Image 1 (cartoon, helix red, strand yellow):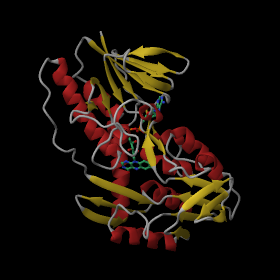
Image 2 (cartoon, rainbow, N blue to C red; image 1 turned 90 degrees about the vertical axis):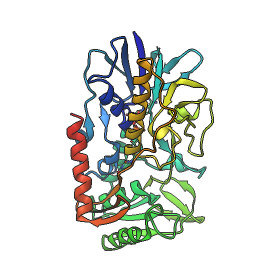
Image 3 (cartoon, rainbow, N blue to C red; image 1 turned 135 degrees about the horizontal axis):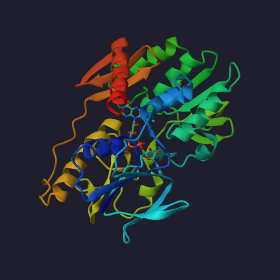
Amino acid sequence: MKNLVILGGGYGGMKILNELLPNHLPDDVKITLVDRVPYHCLKTEYYALAAGTISDKEIRVDFPVHDRLEVKYGEVIAVETSDRKVVMRDLEPIAYDELIIGLGCEDKYHDVPGADQFTYSIQSIEKSRLTYSVLNNLGPESVVGIVGAGLSGVELASELSESREDLNIKLFDRGQHILSSFPERLSKYVENWFEKNTVEIINNSNITKVEENVLYNHGEPIHCDVIVWTAGIQANKVVRNMDGEKDGMGRLVLTPLHHLPNDEHIFILGDCASLPHAPSAQLAEGQAEQIVEVLKRRWKGEQPPASFPQIKLKGILGSLGKKHGFGMMADRAITGRVARMLKTGILWMYKYHNG
Ligand SMILES: Cc1cc2nc3c(=O)[nH]c(=O)nc-3n(C[C@H](O)[C@H](O)[C@H](O)COP(=O)(O)OP(=O)(O)OC[C@H]3O[C@@H](n4cnc5c(N)ncnc54)[C@H](O)[C@@H]3O)c2cc1C
């Protein structure tokens, strides 16, 4: 039996499983899925988990069951490419014939002293739970500093402002306007929403240092009872520690068929892969479909295509609490209740299709 090992049961890993398991896995191939968490976690909802507006159970999806799927729970430490083995913490190494690495991303602190030590995170389920616990145990009128006003910072700030109206939320952002990757009209719509909902936006900020309960903006200390970091991401440490060319986010550079240039048996997926789009769940899924195509052809002894068309993305939607939202769909900006309803619908569909 050949062993296809998938590291990470996130959006990309799940898509691979859902494409292969029903009827595309040859009889002589088995799959080993490795994750530290015993279910697929809906990372796009971590902001709501941290804000305390959804329960932990609502964002879990069971891994599929199949007689040639083995699921191993544990911490991946490293990949030994010369021996074709995955090194695990406290477990035997796992040998692979084909390997797909989809371990997601981690916070990037841009060398700001103290940021890794004194800020909370929503980049993993474990860290989001911790953030939930500190945010929801705060007393009235406490100050929460959120650093970074991209999609996840904006979603957290808005959800928290609805969940805990008694808190003082400060959203720090480097740009002139928040959500710098969106059209200005959308940024202004979201800024107005924050103004109405008494979230303070601090534009043109430059966080130079973090200490316990203190953020330094341009060197000026600002007291915060809890600080959450949403100001950048980088590839998972396992990938950052691998040999090979990487981009500024530590993501491995790939061939057009999504494998390493010097090893056609190692595919890199989702937030770990250097792709010409911003990382997203949609992108991880689109890439997973193309990797499955390469594997299917390889297993049949056929030539894979020389390259694939660009992965088509449908757009991006963000929430502003439970009733409002914003986003870009088919290059059109949308705001308000419709955007929020679409986002809720997409989540519902995803959960429905994934069991
Ligand atoms: C608050 C927030 C909102 C977002 N909203 C959107 C959105 O609206 N739309 C969108 O498309 N994207 C959104 N994203 C981005 C999206 O969540 C990621 O791009 C997506 O999860 C990447 O999928 P992935 O398969 O690469 O990794 P992930 O889904 O992160 O999965 C990685 C898996 O690897 C496991 N893992 C990690 N390290 C180890 C280890 N060492 N050992 C064992 N297991 C490990 C994890 O447990 C996890 O199951 C959002 C992200 C955040 C944080």
